[in-house]
Amino acid sequence: MNVRQVIPRDAIPSVNGPEFGSAYDGNPDDRVVVFEPESGPVRAYPVRYLHYHEIVNDEPNGQPIAVTWCPLCGSAIVYSREASQGTLEFGVSGKLAADDLVMYDRETETEWKQSSGEAIAGELRGESLAVLPAALITWNEFRERHSDGLVLQPPGGESEASGPGDDPAPIDYDAEPYRAYFEHDGFGLDAHRGGDSRAWKRDDIDPKAVVLGLESDGDALGFPLPRVEDAGNVVTASIGEIDVVVFAADGIHAFEHLGFNFEYEDELFFRADGVRWHGASGESGGGRQLTRLPARRLFAFAWQDDHGEDGFWSPE
Image (cartoon, rainbow, N blue to C red; front, side, top):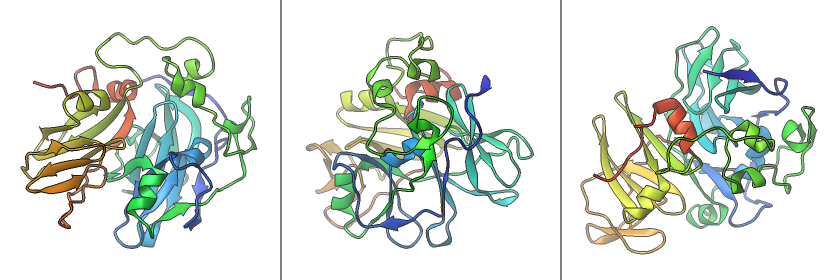
């Protein structure tokens, strides 16, 4: 694995002791990472802020979590901060592993690959962080579904992502430091900085196609959003011992499959067992709730780096 130091440690500052409120100063179609704690209001973490911080160390009602985001990999993953040495606090190491964020914990200085949650160097090498259920949806959808939900308030400060060099600069959350990268075909750090893209030796999946990665009992399967859309916006599969249903609805979402025959109805809704189901939340019109599965949302190239060329779902 190619690991390289790109910027100084903590030049991109993690958020520690985050503050929350009901108001958000961004646009309705801004994406937010949504986490539902074991108790208390649902929380939203705007990607608009995560561009400049990449990690939020949070503890909703005593549940220690790390909300993580790697812009280069498009990877939004929420992890438990519990490990064999206790509760960890994470920071941005300034290193990349195959163009993926390398986190470090401040307790043992172990380094962790963000997309896989695996400790790749240090005292805890070989351990893996537990993935927690989360979703990536628009702010507008979040507010409509969770009227009493809380949203991360602007952390402020300085970040390397704000300036042209390696030194932190004052943050302007209205700027879009990765807009050109997301709009162009190239991928990886060099492409982001205007250089050559990494090679991509397949034409059936775009390297920056959005993928939802699921793992169970040692098996892993990534669901490319375009393939799910082409299959009618809903697919079912088995991963290890778990049957899953995956919806394309304001992003891509995976739930435990109860055996219903889901049929696409319109932009966000599916029909099964005589009622409508909301594909992004798993809620039914009859008050039932599908169980959201722990998942990794990321670009196809990052999933392939971790799981190989055959790690993608495809229709039979």
